[in-house]
Length: 152
Image 1 (cartoon, rainbow, N blue to C red):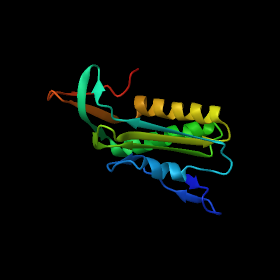
Image 2: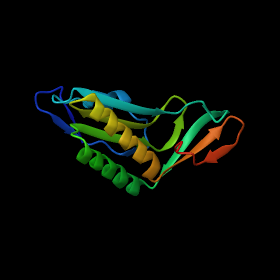
Image 3: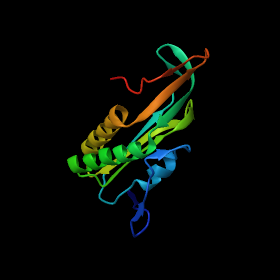
Image 4: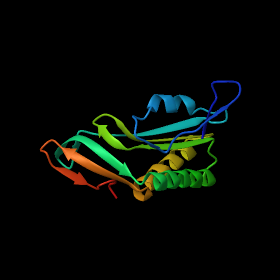
């Protein structure tokens, strides 16, 4: 849940952890402000046009959706216990994701930037390592490769 500080009353918004639709980076960021937060950190994982010297056409993500939703929620909750976050949200895309599109978003907001950065990095690192989400890269030469979700 995130709250918007654009209205006198903070509005709580449910954010789905998994989305088959394109992620609304600007829309989520617009909601990710809090009157007590001096720092808002946005990480947007984008699909690039290359990997390991090969041209990438697009990616496709599959997830064990119910488990991924639970896992991402747990990761965000853990971050809230470690840092005094006013806002913490994470959303990952499934399905075909084209070059230039966003595959994953993490937004953290807190009083100070060091905490917002640390929490954001913690969340994305754990999602990439732990969430049951699988990536297939489709290359320009017609080949594809499953895996490679992180550069561990």
